[in-house]
Length: 442
Image 1: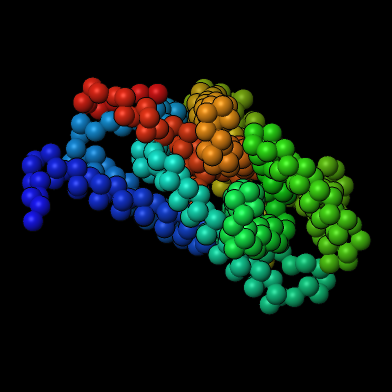
Image 2: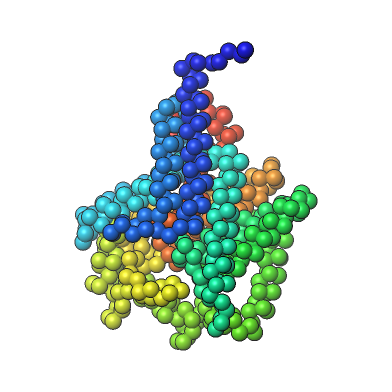
């Protein structure tokens, strides 16, 4: 019978591996739950079940690190979120409501800083990233099937029904990510002649594409076009050609179909502010919110008005006659304005120019790191190129999403994790570090 190593070194290592595996499993589950469940309102606090599960994952990972503090780790990904947190904390000195700043700071810590520390260390292996992308695919397919069933129940009388789904205005962007992953899987499956997997990817792509159409979210449609372009340029030109071909087919189908009138109007409203078009009121409201955010910034350029103080300051800076609530979603629910519907504008108004610069640097550095990895994969490891191209397309989706909605809120775990992945410590780099202590590396 083989002897069992019960040395003090072996026990923490086994414990750490177990805790890491649990943390990764909880992260994958949190992604799926975040994409398929609505956020819950607990007074002024909004909570998504996926974020609660993710917090458990971060706790497991920090427990693993505490059990073996000599392990190499990277915290570079948390630099810019931490800068944002610090700037947000300073905004309390100029805010109208200090309590709102405290809540905003707690949200930034839980939703941005903790994932930015844990995710790069948990998803260091290529197989870990694959599992993360698979969890996104599973979540998007579950949401897509649920939205399709709901659309069939409503029927197409009077046009294709608008269905947001459980994740509401995040849903369309989640479907874009699922569509990108399905397309990547299809290309790889065809190249390796795996017929069953190719058929599954075709089905997943069709479900995500139809669900994306149902959301009638114009920003998500922009994201889909941009993601296909990025994948085509970074990975394979056939993706770009196929995307253009698919777009032409979709446009021909939608051009004369009576059920697609609403969708045609929303597409047209992307390029014009013509009154009466579907999406006109939304565009007008967004412009008014942008003006309000800009006025707040001009009056408070350095530290802003304070985290989560936009809604409080809005009546003081909004254009005359601007409503403080808008009808949102398929059910036209009157919803009070909580932010300017853009992460960039939100940070500019609430934490000032330094906060916005920190966030742009976070996004830009992540994109730059991924572009560099694409170049390395193209030269040294073509098998990794597809995965890296998907991450790059996902980061493109995140960057465009932040033009239309706020990411500093619950339910955006997928986007924050994508921003954290470029900072992961690759195994080849980790294995060369022999300092035996905590490694604060780039």
